[in-house]
Image (tube, rainbow, N blue to C red):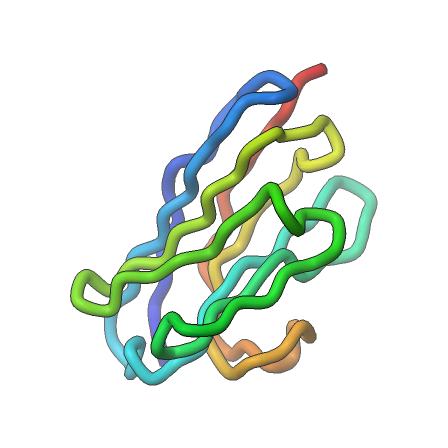
Length: 121
């Protein structure tokens, strides 16, 4: 199983950009599809985006499409989430995940502890 640790969260204003990073250790990171989920207070956990093991294919939730970009660097065992044009509704705890391709949380067996992103209006 892959161990994941997120960084880069914080408080930003609406319209700003922010990049989250996630470093992996153990397991077979380079063979895993990886991505991001988020959970806002009082809401269910939500799929954000995923990138396949080779970095050649991505998929995003409609709510972030065109604003967020998932990327990876297998040599560094890193996953990134570039967020732009942030909105207050993007406020949530963001989780880095590793597993197999899909949008369901059940597809991802490895989860980071999560990191807070707060977007003020």
